[in-house]
Each structure stands twice: as structure tokens, then as C-alpha cells.
Length: 482
Ligand SMILES: *Cc1c(COP(=O)(O)O)cnc(C)c1O
Image 1: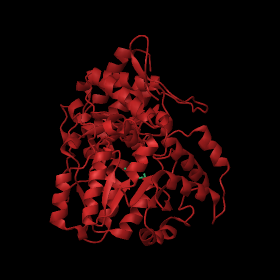
Image 2 (image 1 turned 135 degrees about the vertical axis):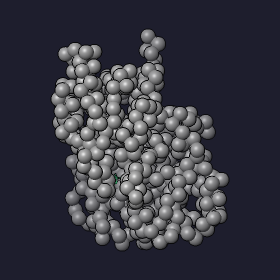
Image 3 (image 1 turned 30 degrees about the vertical axis):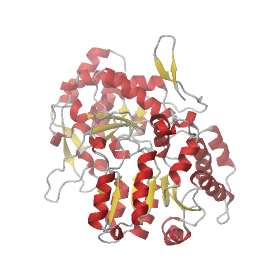
């Protein structure tokens, strides 16, 4: 897919697929939306999906499958051992990544559990460009520590750096000197860096990082969950890769790593996961945990149907026309919002569009959860469900005080191949309206606050009657329209 120039001069991303199965959606009225948001404790995780018009909570396990994926699911081989379905997946991964061994897991975090269990010991340090929630949890569970070495631009919401997920290599060298290579069980590169806005790394940077690791005998691990978007950004933003195919870029990248793991809830348009391994001894070190935690070695907790879908989905991931859809829709959305002055994270990344709530709701103090308030206001305004990625998603300090997050983001994920451009235009329109009425948006406070993972289950209420005022203004501007 590419941006197509219209006669009018406008450039828009043109879908290179047609829709052959549809799901009916409902858009509740603004009064109903406000009632639903309150019933859900002003927490978008607690909304019922039937009350959501556009579900932009996540890109995990909600990407649309292709006709070929659906067809492949029908020919799945159900046998417990020696399944042909497994062999097809194993061979596809070998073809794409060039690794010799594959261990299946039921999803991405299960691969992380096995990696951490096999390699991380008390006092170890695992360097990475940026952490992911489940990755960090497994490493710290084993007594290890995560060191984040992303370049400074990565944490600047307004930077225009094309590869904000890159490693700061001088800092990596310094860290290795300080802690010693023997305390580093592996280095992890997260492609399409999730928690800083789906930002990519360049092929050049990843090669350099792996070269440094080789120099010190440190094992290299790639988290390829968001590799799909990263590949597209390498192809379109990295001069040296302009004339390479996606397959060539993938091969050139993969050969630097000892281990590549992934969540197939993102990579491969399906559900599941696994670990690809270069050396036999490394495979043996992890293999025993698969039957223990996941399932037999030929399914690892996945259904055979899902495995067939992953095999075809991985092949589709090598097609630039297919993988460009997400990034181009996200770029379109970010550009349109920026034109209207709405503060978004730049440059547009993969995964979704990230609204800078700290900037959007400048008048709100961080203790009133600006990103959480914006998520609630966004649902009330348009029936659009996003995810808070800010202070609400943090855990309180030991002494009970708030740990303020570095950024306050509202993430509006773009599940791949799911939405149409008019739906994206609708989201832009309602966000622009909300931005123009941002002074009406107030804060939230907890009424039920769980100690752990409060962002999943916590319930909140508005600190004032700001939601009534927002609804009244909406009605004044839109009349009877939904
Ligand atoms: C989603 C994700 C994971 C975890 O995968 P699950 O399948 O959700 O367990 C790990 N790493 C990254 C970068 C992810 O985006």
C-alpha cells in the first residue's frame, strides 16, 4: 500500500485489500456513552465491547486475518505429536529468520518467561533499548535488573528522529565496562519499541549493537513482536535499505542475533508466539521448559489452527503492500491531528497514534491523571476506546506516594487491516473537537485502587461535574447527531 495522489492534490493511503467478512458496530448516543463510562469506573479496560464503536485499545490479537489465513486454518493437522502444521510453521520461520531451532509458546510473555528462567540469575543486568511490561516483570522476578539505553531523542515527544528506538552505543559500552560482560546474560533489542510510541531502530544501529555484544561475548536477543512495522520503517527511512526487499532486510537483520522471540498476537496477524534459536546448546537450555509451562514441543499451548494462520501471516509480513497499511494509516491520522494543532508523538510510529495528554490537558496536574482523563473524555466524545499510558499505568512507590510517569500518553492503537479511512477520519474529527474544548476536561480520582495492575481493574470518578459540561457542549455543537 502507498499514499495515492488524488486529482484534488490530497494524498491518502489507499487500501490494498477488500473486506469480505464484516462485523456490525454500534455507536451509542452521547448520554449512553457517558453512562457506560461511569459504569466502567472511568477505566476504558472495564468497558463492554458492545458499547464501543471503535476499539483502539490494543493491536494485540485483534488484527484482521486474510482469506489465505482462514483457508490454511481448515487444513490444520490435529495430531498431538509429529504434526504437519508444526513442521510448516517451523520451516517458515527457518526460511524467514535463518535460525535452526524453534520452540513454540502460547504467547509472547511465555517466551519471555522461558528466556528469563533459563538465563537470568540474581544480580544480573539485562540491557535493552526500552523495557516492555511483561519482559521487565520476568527479568525482575528472577532477581535481574533492566537497563534502558534508548537514545535521548526516544524520550522526547517532539523529536523528528527517524529511529527513536535506537540504542545509545557509548552508554552500552560504558554499562558493559561497569557491570562486566559476565553479569549480562543477554542483551535485548525490542524492534518497534512499544512503550515509547511504536518507534523503530535502524538496521545499522542494530548491527552495531550486536557487533559490540560479539566483542564481549554477550548473547543477543531480538523481541520481534513489533518487527513488522520496524521493517517497513527501515525500508522507507533508511537510505542504505531503499533498494532491498523486506525479505532481504529481515535476513540481513536476523543473522546478527542468537535468539529471536515474538508474540504472534502482533507478528503474523494471529495469536501465539515462540522462540527461534541459532545454536543447539541454547535450544537445549530452554527446551525443557516448554512441556513444563506451555505444552508439548509441537504446539506449546497454541491451537493448530492458530499455527497455520501464523505460518501464512508471517509470509504476508514479507509483503510491503501488506505491512505498509498500519504505518500509513497511523501517519495519516497523526498528520491530520497535527494540522489541527493536536499534540501527538512524532514522528508517527507503528502500533497506533499516541496523543500527548500532558500537552493536551496542560491545565491538569499529574495527580489527576491527564492521560486517564483524556481516555475517558475520548470515549464519551466518540465511543472510541484508547489506552492510558501514563501515571495510572504506574505502581505507587513503597511509601504510597504517586510515581509520576515521564510521559502522559493516550494510545489509540490501529489494529492491522481492521478500520477504514472514514473511521480514521471520524476519530480525527472527534479529537479535534475535544481539543478545541479541552478546557472542559477535568481530572479523575480513584474510588477503588488495587495495589498491583491498578490500570486494569481500578475504578475512578471525575473530580467535578466536568463530564456533564462536556456532554452539554457536545449536544450544543452536534445537535441530534451521534
Ligand atoms: C505484546 C508484546 C509482548 C508480549 O506478548 P503477549 O503475546 O501479549 O504475551 C512482548 N513484547 C512486545 C514488544 C510486545 O509488544
